[in-house]
Image (cartoon, rainbow, N blue to C red; front, side, top):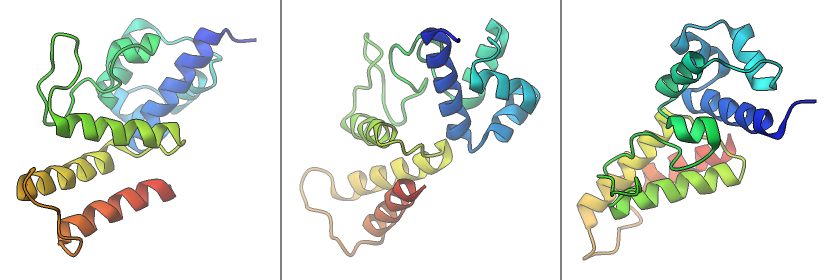
Length: 155
C-alpha cells in the first residue's frame, strides 16, 4: 500500500498532466516515457529529484507545491508581482488564482493554455472597464470569458 505522501504526490503529478493537456504531453515535455509517467501517476514508483524538477518545469508549477503541496501552485502568477510571502499582489492575480482554485476544488482541471486565455480575457475586461464602470454584458470580451469558463466547467 502506498503512503499518503506518495498518494498526494501522485495526485499532484496527475494535475500537472492535466495542466499541460495530457499525460502524453507531459511525458513529451519532460522527455520521459509515458510508461514512467504512468508509474508516477499511480504511485507505484517514486520520481527522482531530477524527474520532479522536469515535471515542475514542464507544467509551470512550483517545486514546493509539487513536492509537498505547500505554497502557491503556479510558479509564475500571471500579471502579478509577488509579495515577500510569495502571494500575488494584484487583484487580477488574486481573481485568476481564485477561479483556478475553485475549478480545481470542483474537480475541473483546466489546461494551462485555456487558463491563460481565460486570464487574458479577464485582464482585457479589467483594462477596458477598470473600477469605474460595470462591464457591458454584450461586450465580446465578456462573452469570450464566459465561453472559456463554461468550456472549463464542461471538461
